[in-house]
Image (cartoon, rainbow, N blue to C red; front, side, top):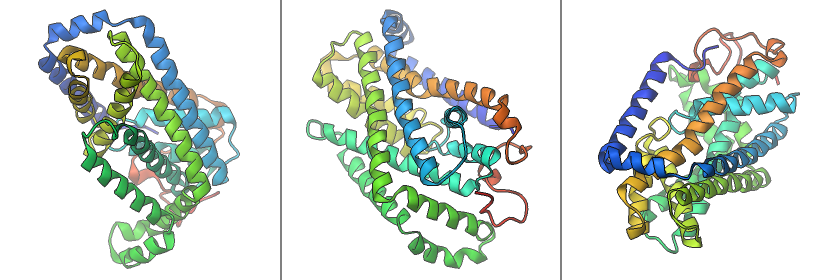
Length: 347
């Protein structure tokens, strides 16, 4: 099973080069290089450590959702490898490439990919909600992006209410049976909606949201550490700015539907730091901060995910998986068995 097509890797690499080139031009390459050399690299480990603590909170949410859907049996170590492997697909629009985890669950446990995909949906919903919670703290001090945040909050609320009512969505999709593509996938979509309802019921929704807030708060703390390493003294104001900037820039990146929000997230970090920190911030420092925090919160995860994939593929659990290994690259079209199954699969 190839996790991603070579063309996708090339596209991501091109995006990264363009983003770094843009930041270098904006900040002046020499100034940016000087700021990065002056970073207190002793603080890199604490920043990455906070990111890892955030991953721990997300893994607890993953385990909660697996239990809620009765997916398994799956050893904790194997479950962790599946979870971490999803990070390898973080550089996709809205991180929806993490549906790879549903394919891995099907391989290991025989669980229908539609049910596993519901976990990814619930993760994205609670992630967005958590970022809105953290961003709302800064709205008392900053007026930036208020209309966008209001629209995002309304859209998220509507999405949650809709996913909690699969019968309503099912009735809306009833006429889609005649559609060439969706009609064939309607049983899988229905299964995904019902599993999503189970994960977004009030109690699991509250638990998932709480864990998401913890995870994103850890990444915000990592951003504070990064800014401190660039010479800014730690203060409550800096923590407030870092939390607000990281939450809003991540939401804007997700809304752009670009792979990993590349370009949009970095530009948002730079722009908001210059706007909100005033004389404390210059172009070189803001650009360096964007590069460093994106490595700590995005590319570090991608690297961990790649390692997780390699370890999982060599594990005994993988070799004894419940389903045969797929031959082609994984995408939305490979989420479901190619046989005449209705898509429910084995549970």
